[in-house]
Length: 135
Length: 286
View: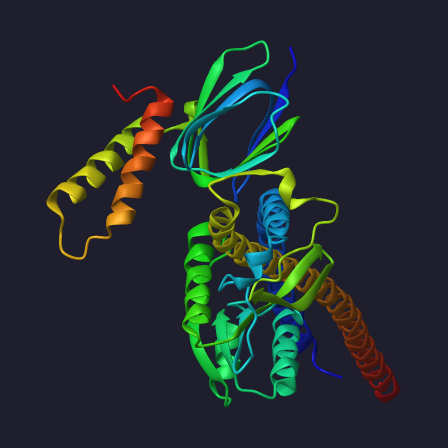
């Protein structure tokens, strides 16, 4: 089976560079899967979970927020605003962030920045989901 | 010749200074290591973003985007990234010179945005418009700072307050070399990538929307990188300056020790002579 190289880079560091069999990412128009030998593609990303199947391993998860992805025949590059491996996620913090964002959206204090609150909620949900603590 | 006590006091004073400069050198070196790794870490992202943006910019409508479209320049803005502290050799002075050269060449009015106390101190008393300034950036510029700054720059550019934004900072090449330079930020000069056809790619959503999402990020990462490079340059300049100071004070201590020994020897000789003369005189009397 052919494989493709997955690289995840954020402005602060290179998060990941592994050989994978498939990648699923939260594209601007919905989740999309990328297999090896994919046609060249560029898409923007939303906050969400990236699933990747390591060669000879199992599927792993990672939370990303914003950014874009470039898929090529033998390489997939994700340029994310932030990215965290499922093992790095601080579940407690994400949960608190989620509650905070939900509260703000519920109470609608004057001068609320909707997009910001909404984004914060999406980010925290993505983190919880990637960490497997969203139930 | 200065008295022995005076020389002794100076030796002690200089060796105290030497301790301080030595410590500052160590601190700068340690911080530099961090800053340097941050600079390296930020490069892949910057490179990739530039690559993607460059490819997209081949689109015919790309030149119409407000962040890309260049217009007649009525006012230029220089963003000076400089140190908060001195004791870094010619680092701050070089940057200030460069900005002054730029301002002198400018025919249309120009304004400054300054990050760093040294720049504010210098330009405050001069007839230059300072749009904004920031102090105490710290030794580890973080991404949120860069994002905030980049957004403000984009805002004043899109508002039409200024028609061109340039970054002035010292590019970091190695611990011994950094070069102050001026770099255009806005309007964005899209990097050119050869041999890549626009049509080769599937875009989701359509290319212009992707480009619209990428350009602000490109801008942010450029500002972020400039901050990191400037910081690494500053720390390396400080390290080199403090290393020089430590060595020089070592030399000075050696010289002073020499004159101290000479003075002491001279004093002993004089004393001996006095004793001898005294003894001779007594003998002659007796």
